[in-house]
Image 1 (cartoon, rainbow, N blue to C red):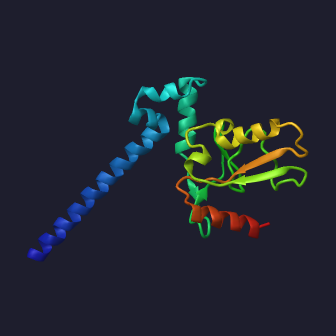
Image 2 (tube, rainbow, N blue to C red):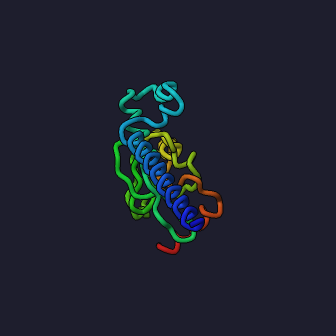
Image 3 (spheres, rainbow, N blue to C red):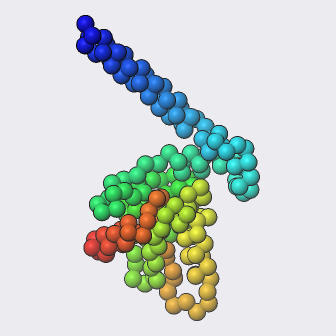
Length: 176
């Protein structure tokens, strides 16, 4: 009799926990699909950070940025997954697009620069053309007397540390 009560209580507890998890994730999913979860968390001041974008554009940018998934990658465990949007684009090779992006694989007639880093280098919260990698490519190409055009490939990923960056670079070298 006592064993039956313990079993029944465990079953009821399991059902309640599953119902709570289902409710939590369904609300979370609905919020991420229909609204700006960043503005919901930090308030309307978020829109002031984007003076050149309308509220609808900011909502779209942040929705693209925070709704993407990662992809498994040997040694580093994850990397940014391929994604194509209006504001955020990640190639199948794993680099984030910059303004006037070079083709893949890199061409020998360009000065090709691979950059690695974490979320700041990736440009979380920014459209492709406003990342530091995009501005760096533009600045280097404006220098007079450059024999080859500069093309930057931004292989940064959120939460990366230096060990993962080195492993990612080594994987790129190994793959040619």
